[in-house]
Amino acid sequence: MTTNEPTRPTDRDRDPTETVEVQRYGPIPPHDTRPGWQAAPAWTSRPAHVSPAPAPRRGLSALPIIAIAVVAGILSGALSAIAVSNMIEQPSVPTGDVAATPDADNVSDVRIDESSAVIEAVDEVTPAVVTIQSSGGGVLGSASGTGSGFIYDPDGWILTNRHVVEEASELVVVLNDGRQFPGEVYGIDTLTDLAIVKIDASDLPVAPIGSSAQLEPGQVAIAIGNPLGYENTVTTGVVSGLGRRITASDATQTSAETLNNLIQTDAAINPGNSGGPLVNSAGQVIGVNTAVSTNAQGLGFAIPIDVAKPIMQQALDGEDLTRPWIGVYYVPVDPALAAEQDLPVEYGALIGTTDGGGDPIFPGSPAEAAGLQTGDIIVAVDGEQLSADADLSTLILPHAPGDTITLRVLRENSAREVDVTLGELPADG
Image (cartoon, rainbow, N blue to C red; front, side, top):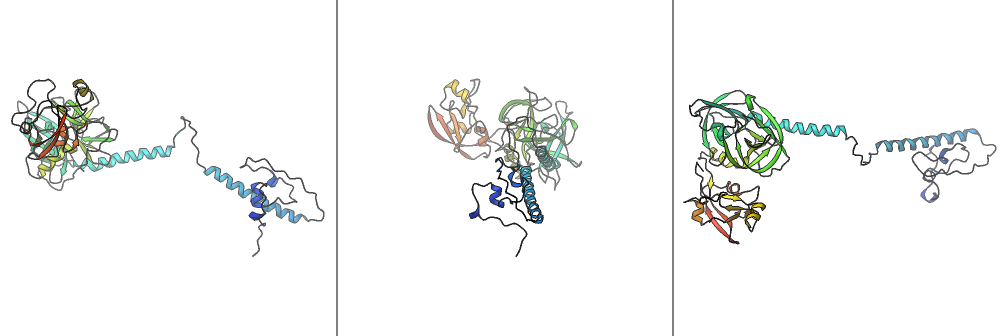
């Protein structure tokens, strides 16, 4: 086979002292008097290798010279094009310039992803969010109010706040599609500000139930409800804190109580939001909006959904709403309390009261039957250590009255295991 391409030298023929171009493409044609490869190409910093001009020979026609020049020009142009292409495609190297503008497309992608996640989460949960209208409560029997709730079972089971339905003589539940049903309070939680409402309906949309066990501060939190009469209102923020203990009121500021183990969020919670779901970016309910702080502005709180799960299941099983009970007052142990009272540990539940008055162990309680004493420090339940995010009440929540648990107790600097058979939390407890 013949070719018009000039013969290239083999590796054995290459002179290592020659430039890369000469090694790869062969020596410069002897009759090409133009710079050609003698000039340093744009993509190399090597000095130009200048060869002495060859003595002209007589009798050589112009045609070979023109042919060689054309081939050299083609090769030179091709290599120049490749070099320029590589320079264009090469990614830029960060220079440490703090004023450099980020890639606008990437920033837009992030914003679109975040917005899409919130929109999809709202679309998933909103059909199950309801408005609860109460009437007939109060001293004169004429009080009325509006709150929120959400359907967690398609046969008409709704979770809401206790203060939304407590003392009401009549409830009307308005679904997201506009249908209205009379509501009946199935049960009131004796431990938290929660209640179960039942309506006579089926095949209803339900809100996906998530978990509050692995929440982290900073993750997206979405509050959905019907505040101030505006249906299907969505507010967004983040999980601001966990395990909060506050004195709080409902959004109407008509009642106050001490609430424990709450999710704190900066998603706006307003009058009418109470009982609505707090949702993560995956469209799962992680909490029940319950209160705004009486001592701060812009802070909302929600009951973790894991706290609500036991009574949600009890209702589905047709059981009374009950909570397990030990029967003690206790103070959460933290480093400050440990230092103040010279305690042997910086965590746990110290049996006692903050004011020092009264017996912290209820007469006839499971704690009394198990022999617990004032000053005991409970440090673990069934081998799981107490912490700021998992206090005593939280760790016994998964159990039912009648279950026996094992407490690890420190008494006079010695540890012991104490078995306690849980009782039922009194309605006024």
